Image (cartoon, rainbow, N blue to C red; front, side, top):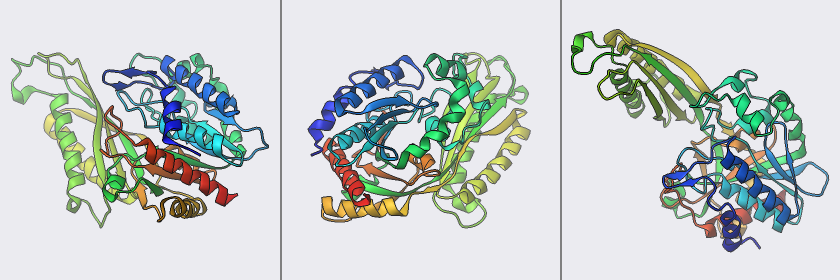
Length: 404
C-alpha cells in the first residue's frame, strides 16, 4: 500500500540537490538537474523499471511489459528559489504507484517544465506534442549568454534529434499528473485532493523599454526618458486593467495579471535607467478575456510611449491554449476518490501550466492536485502533507485499475 512514510523516503533521496538558503535552484540542463536524473535512475532501479531518455531529454522509467503503458509523473526542475514539492512530489508518487500497481505503469519526468532558465516552459512535453518552435527556441540564451542548444548538448541531448520526440507518445495509453495545489482552494474546502477539469489559457508577454541613460541628480524631469519609471507605470496599469473588469469590452471571467520578472540597465544608483526588460503573465479560463485585456494594454503602451519618450516594444514570449482534460480519466478519478475518501473529490480549474495539459493534445490526460495548506508555491514556503499525497497516489492507482 502507498504510504506517507514511503513517499517521504523517496523524496528524502533527493537530499539537498539544488537547495540553497533562499529555496530550491534546480534549473533545467544544469549540474543540479543532472543530479536529479541520478535520483530518478536510482528510484527506477529500486522499483524494477528500466530508464530511457527520449530525444527531448524527458526521462522514462519503463515497465517490463509491451507498450502502450499508463504514464504517471511530473517534473524535477525548479524555478529560481522554488519549493521542494512542485514537480518532485508527482514523480515520487509515480514511483510509489508503479511499485504498488497491479498493472504496468511508466513513470515520467518531463524536461524543463518550469522554463526558468531559457523561458521555455513545458519544453519536454511540448517536444513530445510536436509543438516546439524549432530551431528558433534552441537559440534562446540564459543570463550568462549560454544558448539552449549549447546547454542541452552539454547535458547529453542531441539538438538535431529533438524533432523525433513525438514518436515516443505512442508508448503512452494516457498520462496522469499528481501535483501540489498552488492555491488555497482545496485547503479552504478541507479536501485532501481535487480533480482538475481544465487548465486556463495563458499568455506571457516580453516587454522591452528603451529610454536614455542620464544623471539621476542633474537631469530635469522634462528632459528625462526614464525606462524604469515608465516600466513601473506600465506594470501598475496592466494590473489595474485586470482588477477592473469594467475596463474591458464584453463580459469576461476571472483574470490574473502578474509582472513576473524585470531587468534594468545600467542598474546603477545614480543613473536613469536606459533599458528595461520585463515579463508580464496573463491567465484566464479563455483567450477572449486575455485578448480583451491585451487590447487595453496596447492602448496603455501607446499612451505611455507618447508621454514618456520611451520606446516600448511588446512581443509574445509564449501562449498556451486552455486545455480540458479527458472526460473518461476524470470520471475514473472521481469514482476512485469516492471509494478512497468516502465522497467525490471536488473538481476545479487550474490557472497554472502543466505538462499534463500539453500531453492532453496527443493522449488522454488528467491531473490530481494535492492540498497545500498555505497555497504558496514557487517558494521555499510551499508545503504539503504526505498523508494527503499518499491519498492522491492511491486515488490515481485505483483510477487506473478502473480504466483497465
